[in-house]
Image (tube, rainbow, N blue to C red; front, top):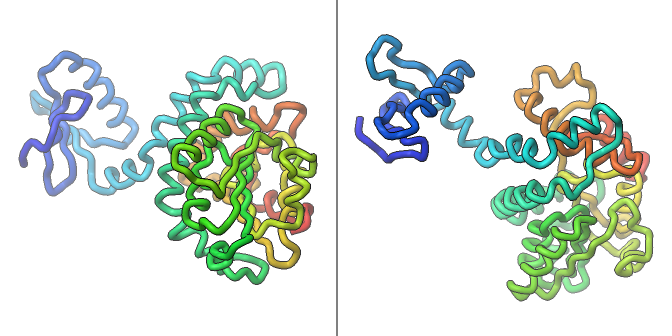
Length: 318
């Protein structure tokens, strides 16, 4: 074994065929390191390799390492949500109602970084080409987006990552990103201008009221080749209206609506074996449901599930 590097917990990470072994260092903060490792050992994440040694060793097996690497940035999510809105969510749970979106400003910024990384990796190369196989209508695929006159609209675009990537990949298409979050839209607009992307525009519009004459939205009715919604519908105060609006934007017979959401069931009992269920329900409690409960909304929450989603899509005309 040899010293690989020193991590920010002041522990030397020693590589071995087993995985990674942590040995407590002699620097200040050793007590905090010990307590952090105790949490990880009792949580069955890290193993205590040599209990009786004077200097304990803490091992992280390769399968645990791979699982943790897959979580990546998500480890920041719950602490950030607690900082943003713990008291507000507690009050809403006691008194009813939702939590003002302004409480989640830093979380919105974090979500933007997450979306950037996810869409950069998957959107253009993998996700969009796969739509031809999953669509319920005959769609000519990404080649259609290369034609002059193609129109794409991203609902709940946040800080604009998906819309920007689509506009850059398909310069002949006209791309719209809409969201009700003013700081997010302003950030998206600045980035598009900085990058010189001219076939893209962002608009502060309520996705639950797409038929209103905002930014000429009525002119888009029946004109879109592709409408997307990435993890956004379940946060809305009127998701049914948003789905109906999305349907109205599509070209008859050929337009495609691509909605990405959490893979889960609607019934709690059907999610008991879901490996991420405790985490996902907690995120929903702290953010998604309070957002959806504003203005008398239904508060679908992140775990609304496939069955309810399909029922609502059917009611919206899909």
